[in-house]
Image 1 (cartoon, helix red, strand yellow):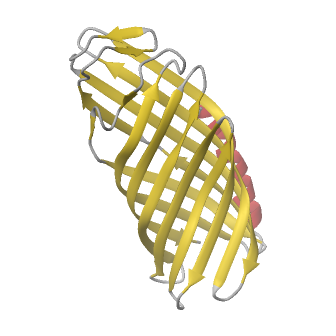
Image 2: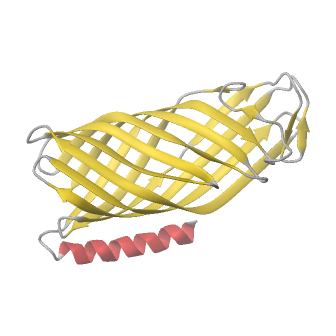
Length: 249
């Protein structure tokens, strides 16, 4: 993962440096934070033999502060290239009223358990703005996503951990309605559904430009998706109360 990040950093640096030579290029940095709440988070590992249980309903998952960082640039007015780092790790605790078989380990009923759900995301996105009007913008693109996932269950006597790192191609989209010179409403995200599973990460927000170079935003983000196969069954939903800052250079 460190090698991947180094390669992406080098590529972005090259693009930014080349973009700075054009008057139509604009570098941006987007910082987002807030609180994330667990919706459903149903897990069965292995997918064809484990015990189906919920990390958010049968165990107690507390809200958690989150952050995301996106950097990139717009060139030629319509072309957008960016990288995103979006970590997520939520912990749960409690007990089940039945035995839990998880990744080959059996946790007896009524055992005090601690669960960890990690879903870190690294994304490289290219988007082309198809519509560019004074009051409305709309673009579509492609996101290359690397997921770094882990589901773990711990007790005083045992532990069992399932990790997975994989590549996921996703469709990127962006729509923005400008209500005034400084105020706009936007829908921005990545989403794709396939027989192997689905993934949606969508922000609905209001954005206000404090100045020509600085914008603030507030809104709701939904992160949802999962997969159902012999190795893993997991479908989860997370609700985000999000605020953010965008800097344009």
